[in-house]
Length: 269
Ligand code: NAD
Image 1 (cartoon, helix red, strand yellow):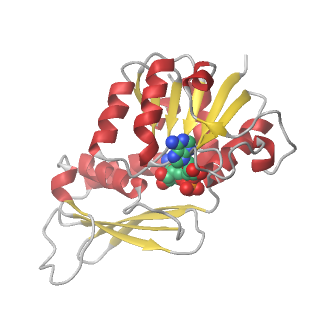
Image 2 (cartoon, helix red, strand yellow):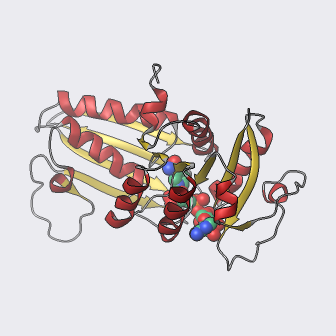
Image 3 (tube, rainbow, N blue to C red):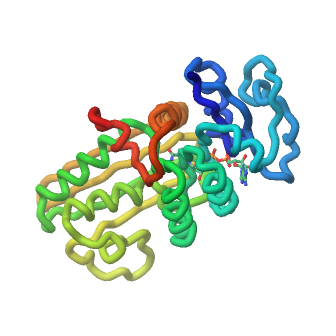
């Protein structure tokens, strides 16, 4: 049976990709797409938004009636949408694929509470290659001692509103896990002015913004006379949408809980 899918944030860059892939994929029946009440595109046909022939579905706001009919909702919106969407997901008990980044600690708590009543998969980056990179970074950080400085460099398009990227932060957490350290104590999210020498064990970040690029991340391990660089380059944001729909297929029918993409990639799951 096909998966009844709702795309939250359907008029956004990720939302339109998700609409297009879902409409063209027989595994899914798209039942709705949502936006903010003030969006001038409200009421627009979802097929048209995706650059496809028209459907009988119009862009609407997220509400109980729509989520009540869904199996899974895919959410690439904004942190301001988090509390409202968490409440709707909790009420409907529907699968929630959450890609929004830049969440506060309070938002994150709401995600964890919601996962007690609905199956939730959250990933800062739904690209399958990035999820392998996370595992490689943990392994490298565990094998290379503190004489190897860890720096994380990321570059994204000029419309991105949060920094460092959610993926860069996840890579930093993966490195801290490998070092068995506390990420919040080790992370230096930016540098400016007279910073003093680099403390041993620090995990440094640098953020670049420009153009239209989907996202590039490098994790640099630098020692006295060699550097190991692990990198991922996304050339099209369609990879995030594909990963999110892979996750949507996996999460349908799962018991409540907070899942990661690594869970879905585990052959035994
Ligand atoms: P965007 O600004 O193009 O789109 C966001 C859309 O969400 C907008 O159309 C906005 O109107 C809509 N929105 C906001 N509040 C809403 C609400 N309450 N209900 C319904 N819709 C609402 O942004 P984007 O580039 O598509 O990215 C969206 C989010 O996804 C960002 O947080 C971005 O960092 C994140 N992202 C994550 C991944 C990943 O793999 N996890 C990949 C790409 C982008």
